[in-house]
Image (cartoon, rainbow, N blue to C red; front, side, top):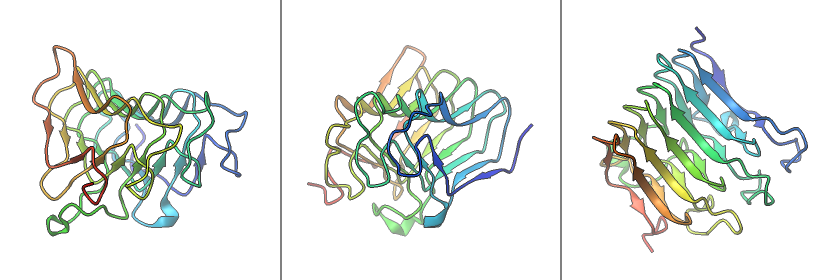
Length: 219
């Protein structure tokens, strides 16, 4: 089993010009088959990965035992300038979790007194074609905290030509947590839904204290 690895400071899926290259791969970063305690990104600006232009997903966490992995401080879906990729170059999903993966984290928990402020360790997950974050069958106890999901990096502007269908899609997944008091995600600028829950098995998920729809100034 792979554990305690750090993936930081990389261009994954794009060439060094951050344009959509011809070297398409299916997934940017895959954490699978019981890999645990791995970190994608980090707290410092230099740790940020730019993960875009992959055919399927930017990050995949899958499989029983793939737990306690953290995705923090990354830009997932846009190019290095914060713009949408050309049509047909976007990856389908920013972060995909399922297949029995439990207790993983997207975004870094900020101090409770930080209120609704975004943190430097938040992920920017925008410009993906279908969903910014997908929690599928077998995903449980995922924490999604302090992320910007859908808008441009400033939290106010729309991503021109790059609106995701849904910010967060939960499908037949249980006991996941999207935001909490003092740990808000900003989920806005998505095409159809900020948060969508579907499937008869989807249960005990909590969507709490997020900014859904407005910009960071609540307008």
